[in-house]
Structure formats: C-alpha cells, structure tokens
Amino acid sequence: MKLELKSGSLEYLDVGRGRTVLLIHAFPLNHCMWEPQLSVLSAEFRLLVPDIRGFGGSQPPSPWTMETIADDLNGFLEKIDVPDCAFVGVSVGGYIALSFWSKYPGRVRKLVLANTRARADTETEKAARNDMLAALEQRGTAILPDRMLPRLLKPNSPPAVVSRVRSMIDEASAPAAIYAVMALRDRPDSSTLLHRIHCPTMVICGEEDLLVHGDESRAMADAIRGSRFVRIPKSGHLSNLENPDEFNRVVLDFLRQ
Image (tube, rainbow, N blue to C red; front, side, top):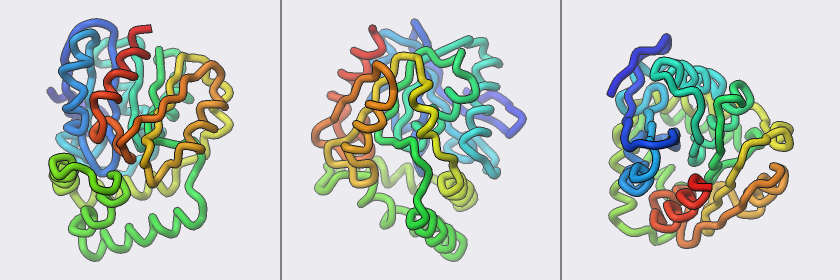
C-alpha cells in the first residue's frame, strides 16, 4: 500500500487485526526484513510495516534525521487514523522509535528496542561514518555488502539469512544510503530520555551482536523504569532474522501483556 506524505510517498504493509503494532526496519534494509514476523504477529495484532524514507517503495530519497522520520510516521498514523500503537524497532528502527517517543509519547503504547542504543556516535564512530560516506559517493552501494554483512550478522550465519540480507542491501540506492549514514552520524544522544520513558518497554540484544554489546543493552534497560531485558541466543545485530522463533516468542509474549 502507498500513502502520500509531505516528504513523498510512503509504502507499507497493513496486515492482521487487533491492537496496532508498528515495525521499523534497520539500515540499509527495508520492510522485507520483517517477513519472519508477519504470519506469527499478525495472527493476534494489526501490523503496520513501513519503508522509511528513501528505502523500498518510500520514495524519493531526501535528507532526514531521526526526528523527521518520527514526523513522517506521525503523519502516517494520523492519515490512517491510528491514535496509538506499540513500536518495535531494530537497530536504526530503535533510534527512530526513541525519537518518536520523545516527540509523541501519547501515541506510544509499548516500546520494543532491539539491537539498538540510546547514546550518540563517538568521534571514532563518526569518522567511520564519514569514511563510508566518501566510499558511497565514490563507488556507490557496491561497497555496502562487504562492509555491512560482517557487522550485521553473527559469524557463520546461515547462508539463507546472508542471502536474504544481501538482497535487501542490493536494493538500496546510493542517495538513500548517503542520507541514512548522515542521519546516523548526526543523531542526538537519547540517554537522558530513558529515565522519562513510562510506557512498557522491552530491550532486546543479540547474544553475538558485534555492534551493540549486551552490557550496553542491559544498561539501557536498567535506565528505563520497569523495562524488560532479553538476550536472543544465536543472533547478531539482526535478531529478528537470525533467530526469528525466539524473537517472535519474546515479542509476542510482551505484546500480549
């Protein structure tokens, strides 16, 4: 399905019935990363599964920040008359979910923050983003699979998972990737936001995540009053794809409560 926003067209899936759950994908992927969740979660909930600006069918690419994507999603929810929902975000999706809560807390019923963090990039991480930007500008998205796959997935990830992630990376355009890396580099620190979160929240980490370590995820959960912390075994930075059965189990249990 497609819907027109001020920023362009937003493509999304709308499946299932029940209380609404919004799934926000990671970089440089698209809404297809949620395929292992669709049949399980939609049996009990209405799922809204958008492509964020510039990815998948949400075009055209344009500069964005976590805050402007939050505005996109707020406009989306208003247009389809959804007053509130649970948010599930993986990686960048978690950054966006935190930003949405900071701007529109009354519209967030629950939060699932998976394989993500609250702090901003360090200077070293910003330098690495700048290096990636230079490479994208010079060589385009051909650089992405070799740079991203070893970081997103655990070592010895099943070939089918590697193939699925690679195919999504291959669909990303250079402008979309460039704007996303800029947004990642420049995102604000949300650490001081955590103690203010009052909706039910679950923080998920991948046991073999090379980008966001379990100790950091646990510290984030500890900062959110009453939150739940879950470690997904046999998974890296994309826990919903690498161990979908366990991811689905813990998310479904949390959403049911």
